[in-house]
Amino acid sequence: MKDLIEVAGGKRLWGEISVQGAKNSVLPVLAACYLANGQCVIHNCPILTDVDAAIKILKYLGCKASRQGHTVYVDAENAYGYEISEELMHEMRSSVVFLGAILAKTGKAELSAPGGCDIGLRPIDLHIGAMEKFGAKITEEHGRLYFECPEGLKGTEIVLSFPSVGATENIMLAAVTAKGNTSIVNAACEPEISDLADFLNRCGAKIHGAGSNAVFIEGVEKLSGCEHRVIPDRIAAATYMCAAAVTKGQVVLKDIIPAHIGAVVSVLSESGCDIAIRNHSVSLSAPPVLRKMGTVRTMPYPGFPTDAQAPVMAVAALCSGTTVFTENIFENRYRHVSELCRLGANIKVEGRVAVTEGVKALSGAAVTAPDLRGGSALIIAGLSAGGTTKIDGVHHIDRGYENITDNLCQLGADIKRIRDYEERECETKKNTASGA
Ligand code: EPZ
Image (cartoon, rainbow, N blue to C red; front, side, top):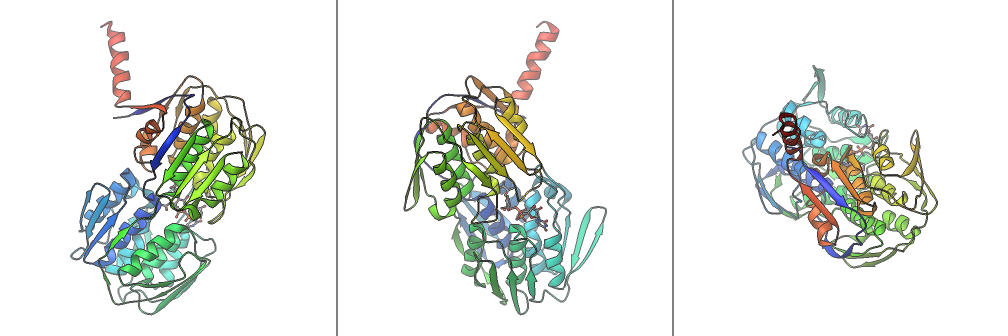
């Protein structure tokens, strides 16, 4: 069943919404639940297909796992599964974040090499190298990776050649119950790393320095269950700010952590948006004409987040002047550019650089979401484009945005989700063909 999102552009966004919990925090926290002896209760879990996939993996490993609204309950006490099926790995490539927890708990792990995805090769050499340093033996056969460490993981020092978010998370999950101490040098500093450490420490782990590039973990015997509320999704917040920016709108986003969106605030302020930060909310009032943003370089946190590059590019497409993007994190994260150009944007890509010349207006067309954040960029562009924009590939968007069409409707957008569009369209073609 394929759905379609249809946007009639030109409506000014106005009002306030609450921002969902962070997808990229929920996933490692759910993986960490596998290590806890007892029930974990995780609040503020967004309703997303990636979260559903993580719950499926926990059940496949033998856990009791269920969701009630935005709360997920996990009990891993009597779960000792150690392999993730090809099918489940295929459903969500970030399933690799379960590796550290499975290996720590069972002394072995079997999963598929995640393989590339829409935005790049997504290698896991840093994850594998780290597990070897903990003492695991690794073999690969027919695309399946086999990890073994029957004597258990031993604490060690790991120097990351790149501050990989996923590798930092897997190392933390492997280290918390390892024998001895572990230090991570050049660790990722993203807020989701700190949130994972907060969760693990609440379960009895001893992690120091999370959120900085030097993390120190003292191995403990075991972890208990706990209750935890996941941080807000800084990328969802950035996405809704961009939607307001392109519609000359005025919105308030509640339940956010302002410190997490600093780099996006500074880029949107440069385009002329008036942004005010309050304790747990941000308000954005867009100018009648957006100014160019200059240069946007994606960097590890606290630099400009790669996940906000596509949504912000949809804003840059409408700024008066040139904005130059450099994508330093992933090697293929401009698949939304061709779709934005179908809507009338003027963007040229040369390797990791995308030069965006602002245009006065975009015009609606039929486009396809190439990936999660590219999909959100097309919605943002459609909100401003004259006429109607039809977006398919909605399953990509469902991976990371909870109820994005309802939220935008609440802010005054003319946007709707058309269910089972493909079947209906075939139905029409069939009827026409048979002259029905
Ligand atoms: C996490 O992916 C996020 N996903 C991504 O969000 C985000 O874009 C990324 O971090 C960067 O912030 C989740 O948290 C589930 P990395 P991750 O390891 O962990 C290279 C979204 O849209 N690398 O920091 O996979 C890698 O190829 C998603 O919500 C290696 O070379 O990112 C990339 O170029 C997309 N070897 C760079 O590092 C490795 O072993 C950053 O990757 C691991 C990574």
